[in-house]
Length: 179
Ligand code: IMP
Image 1 (cartoon, rainbow, N blue to C red):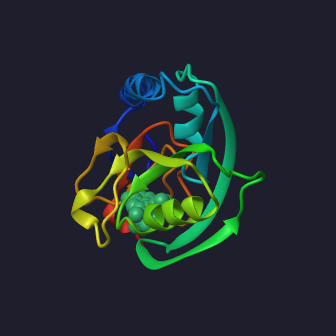
Image 2 (tube, rainbow, N blue to C red):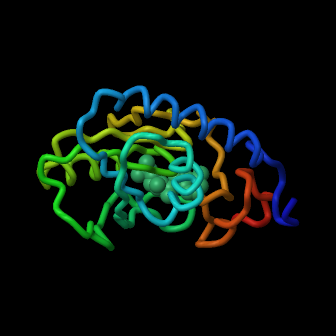
């Protein structure tokens, strides 16, 4: 375990197993689809989760990425800005957004609106974590890996000021590391 970590909430095996289950749910949902699904990762937190999840998805997919900024350290500033836009048109496309977490819900709400405004036929969301106790706007993911209490987590894509994203597990830092 990394020296800055207090404890691990989900180890790599648990995350991998959950990804396999989520992929099954996703395949089941899209089983009658005649078209390719566009999987859109929300950078940068989606990276490890998306890489792990798509290995187990059998549905025909294409990949794209979107970057938005809404977070400064530990607190949400509540204003979502597009930092990197999609590479292609999504008119009439079924879209599956891959998020790291639904926290206040602001990001996913904005992203859903943005993608619908771009002409998507349908927008579904898969999120590795859900922190329902922190919600300030009405928003939800359609597929959820794990529900968590009100912890600020790091690892497996989650950062604290851009650090710890590469850890293969999700955990909580020692109190003195959150500064
Ligand atoms: P929102 O508050 O639902 O808009 O979430 C915005 C973003 O904040 C998420 O996509 C994460 O990147 C980040 N975030 C929320 N909670 C945590 C956390 O516990 N650890 C690290 N990043 C977080």
